[in-house]
Image (cartoon, rainbow, N blue to C red; front, side, top):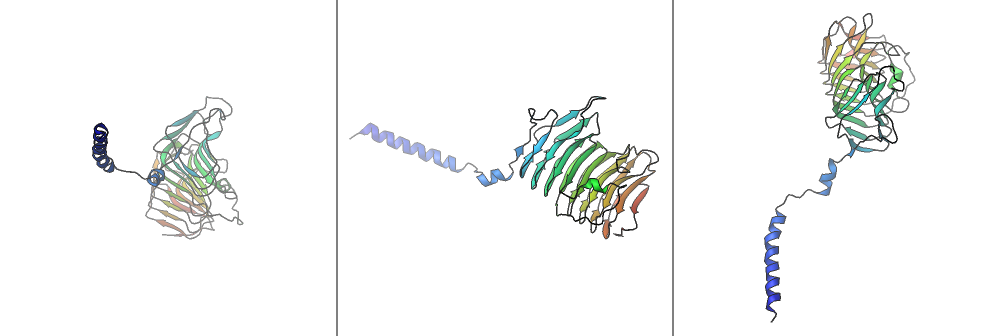
Amino acid sequence: MNLPHSISAVAASLALAIVLPAIAQQPVRSTAQAAAGACEVLHWDRAGFDKPTLSITRPGKYCLDQDYEFACAPLAHGCMGHLIDIGASNVDVDFRGHTLRVSGTRSFSGVLGNGRNIRIHHGRIEGAGKGIVLSDKGNSPVGAYPALPVSTTDVFTATGFVVEHMQFSDVRTAIMVGGSGNQIRDNRIDATLDNTAPGGPPFALLSYGPAARIERNTFRLSDLTPGWKGYAMYLRSANGTLVANNTVQVGGARTGTIGVGLSSSTDVVLESNEIDTETATELDERSSVRQ
């Protein structure tokens, strides 16, 4: 009889009996659960870009793990661009509380996106000329500047952009979106309207296209250039858009400030907004509202 071997086998079995229950009690996180909140961290490709540029070229979930800053020296050249460049549809960018910061220039933007179903959320943008600009082919919001003529032949695609839980400070324009069915909600926007845009009066938010929902945003307008007018929200071709539960405040003189400007926009619903501008609503002859 091989006693030592039997004793060893029994000892191994006892050890297994002790260890297995302990393992069974450990919480197990499935692969699907782990993947559900996963994101690809954006990093600056220093070899490819001399300025901090975070590029997205394919669908997916992305996030930041640090702040990014671009400082342009006075009188320096080449201070144009944007910090996050999105060239794909079905993209989610979670700032995770981080900040994109620009100083020394108004020609640098925070986020430029081209595609559909792009969501930007939970972060901060400071000092940029434009905070977030999102469009699809043929629906660029740049074509809807207040001084430009209205196009009656536009066909808007279902872009489905979402900008939510973002904070903007010391920006000239916080958000510009073009397309149909976009949502802008729960943002804090501090806009410095201290000059005129290339296409006319400045604005904190521009929505170009129908069926948008602009809800629960807080605006604070300041430093509007004397003799000019400036908008918290400017809407063009925005048929069927809902503007609800927004707050607009003015720091300093209220002269020339406008809460909501409508251009060629019919059946717009204005509901439960608190607007402290000189003029609450400005409509052109092609626009109508329901309250």
